[in-house]
Length: 387
Image (tube, rainbow, N blue to C red; front, side, top):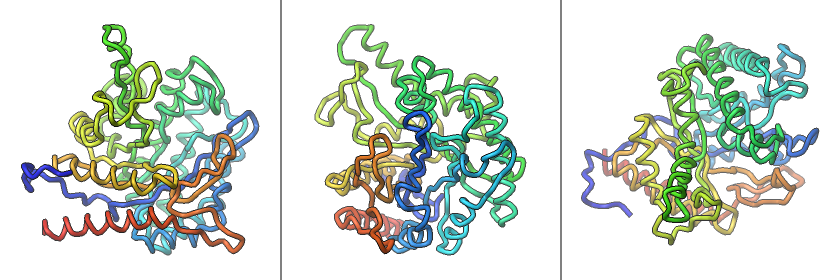
């Protein structure tokens, strides 16, 4: 696991969030076919079980969490905002003393708004500004906000292979730039209302290897691999300055990490036993060296039978990264609660907590909960030794 040659002085000590281990609620509101929206807050029962769900967070010592403000429900008419769907979330989080990371667009947007037009950028920026104003009025001074969830994945799934909205092909890069521009405009608007707001910019962490030894294969793999950095580079003002990015907008690097996030450039999976597979701690080290920013593993998980083993392996890798001085500040379990799979209605048990029964009670994935508790104890023991 950890190499004893790493000195304790170089080890990173996480302090950024209220808790290192966190929970991420499913809050996508994508349309999986034209006119058929899949609101995962509804599908998981979370929208009606906010108090119970946030109480479960506190019970399991997950004191920082990610949840979504559903833009399509809040702005049903241009420029008019109804916060009835969001305020109960804010109130429940306050009641249970949960530090929140609020997402403003998780693959969904209001009906009737054309995502390809300049109006989309303007409307999203205005919505984000209104959201920040509401938080300020509710006494939130330094909120954590993730404006656009996984821009790279959204642009690939929605505009490269037409998996979900906007159901296009061959326009992925165009959508990626449009979403990045909207996110940047939103962050400027938020900062106008809340100068101390912090942003979590979340995208997939991946590794792409060449499936052959030719120069063309290596070049194609490198191109795919490097594409994962574009959104962070744009938002941080490293490239495409016309989008409006600037260095101080890139506060926290959010990463999603799943078992299928390494592949060969031809699409074949890259398995852990293959020599080209890269361990997570090395990928985290790459991100840390590139951006010199705090890192949050904002989503990670596996289906129920693999959940505990996956969490343990991820935690081992993150501990190694911390020993190497990588500024990893947290690990967030996703999905925190089960839901019918958003792309085909298949029940996909993967959460720490199951779908609710008739009384609104959720079962506990005992193996996952035990693994979580064990990792929390290990973290506490490490902290105690360091102090």
